[in-house]
Length: 316
Image 1: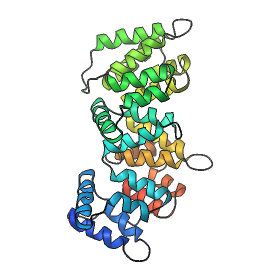
Image 2: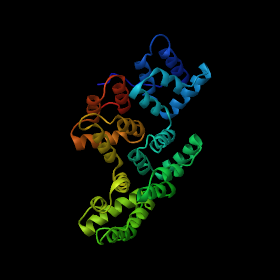
Image 3: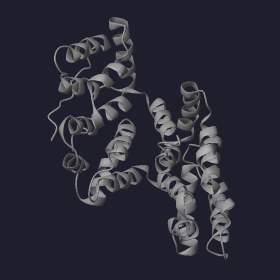
Image 4: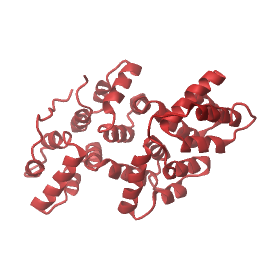
């Protein structure tokens, strides 16, 4: 297990910048010192360290980290150094580039974020890349999948917990009529309801659907849709009901079988650490009867392992 410890009180960003500079100096990099600082600072503090580093040494800390670290550790640390919206923007930009296209990753990021997170992400995306997120989605996706992603990033949704039970029943009936009740599927109804309703409302629809038709909405989606459209609908539904459980499954899938999907492992751990990682760890333990830390420990090695475990924090 990782031996890294969380300092009881953060040093000043200036002190951290000085310590990082010392870790880079000389022959080889003191990678453990770098991890010990960076893995234990929140997004605000990391941003301030970057500013102090530039002021003190007229150098970009990200570029320096990139030249000192390598491979999977470099990828994970550079992602971590960005604020959440900037990180999501970078992940999406890469996932929506023809040469690196990863529509599963793009779907996961878009369909698991809250409306306010998406609003900020879209602004950052444009300021970083000079192109609208919608433009890249349109170029790289197609059919109902593309339409759903576009609707999802452009529809303001309520983020509170209040639910109109009558409306939830109306929506449940509409989804039944559009799917299981008819021959073929009215995809537009699924698209509209899933992109326009709040998370609390979708969770209520799922509950009502089960009571009314003796079947889960998840099964209905799987039976009536396919491919990336199905993936997007299920991601929205899972994140409406229990995002931590959803991400526990994504992490398990990334680590099971021969080899590890490090791209997914890094993306989920780095993006969820400051949001809901403690809940994800609880769900992982519950579902797979094994601590997430142990799974990550057995699938990774070296400084890369130390960094991910430092982000995860102690098992208990």
